[in-house]
Amino acid sequence: MNHTTKSGFAAIVGKPNVGKSSLMNALLGEKIAIVSSKPQTTRTRILGVLTDGDTQLCFLDTPGFHKPKTKLSGHMNNVVTTSIGEVDLILFLVEPMGELNEQELTLIETFKARHLPVILVINKIDLVTPEQILERIGALQSLYEFAAVVPVSVTNRNGVDIVLDELKRNCPEGPFYFPEDTLTDQPERTIAAEIIREKILRNMRDEVPHGTAVVIEKMRERDANPDILDIEATIYCERDSHKGMVIGKGGQMLKKIATDARMELEKFLDTKVNLKCWVKVRNDWRNDEKAIKSVGLTYDDEI
Ligand SMILES: Nc1nc2c(ncn2[C@@H]2O[C@H](COP(=O)(O)OP(=O)(O)OP(=O)(O)O)[C@@H](O)[C@H]2O)c(=O)[nH]1
Ligand SMILES: [Mg+2]
Image (cartoon, rainbow, N blue to C red; front, side, top):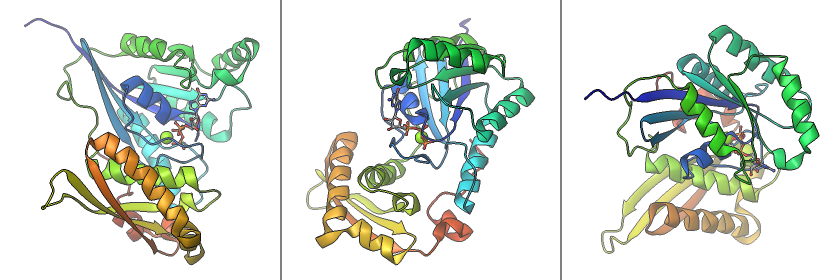
């Protein structure tokens, strides 16, 4: 068979909250990465695979690149720089307005060192005027020679197909890395834990959700009724006072989080789910290497 295929890894990078995970989900047409209005939602590298005709694109959604404040955020930033070092292409996401921050300028310096094709995605254009978009494009093009510049609104699904065209155009030739029906390498347990964490992020305010981690203790079809999947999860938080807030008055907050999570889990796993969540305290776990490891968040060098 003399049939040329294209395949490549593309890292999705940018500062926190610019819409990286939203864009990956939109490109894949499936939600595999959680999304919230709070910065630093994504904590690890999330693989998403899109096989479209002769091209296979392997996306690495990464945590927002930021000024690290805890050991965990150091790990998160490492995921970004390592990913940039391992891919064929970069999708660099920026907001449509405001100044670029120090971390974004650092990312651009990293691109220069790697000589990779970088597709600049200006996201959230639904929030600005066409004049502001043009101004933004000009300012960014003076900093780097991007392979393409695509203004996008993931929310309105505006421009997402153009990003896909540019990815295909810039993708190198090569054999597929994964079977054609692969979507992600995340185990169902990991996705389940992330869905619960997303509901914590969406239901709670301030610093509490950032200090939580979710571990699935059990995920099993019920012996007496295999149509029901029993899931047990522990929500770790970093202080006693946070535990109280996660549980809420009369257990209301935890109930809301668990109900929201169960509904999405049932849709995602296409089965009835019985979800039990416990809340435990692990003091200042985000600065404790052992604890970071035990909740599965150490940075792993391998794809
Ligand atoms: N107005 C607007 N909001 C958007 C758009 N795309 C994403 N968002 C919102 O931006 C917020 C952040 O989205 P995420 O996809 O979680 O951002 P991220 O870059 O992955 O964030 P981190 O994982 O924290 O680095 C969410 O509230 C999204 O709904 C867009 O095109 N327009
Ligand atoms: Mg994200």
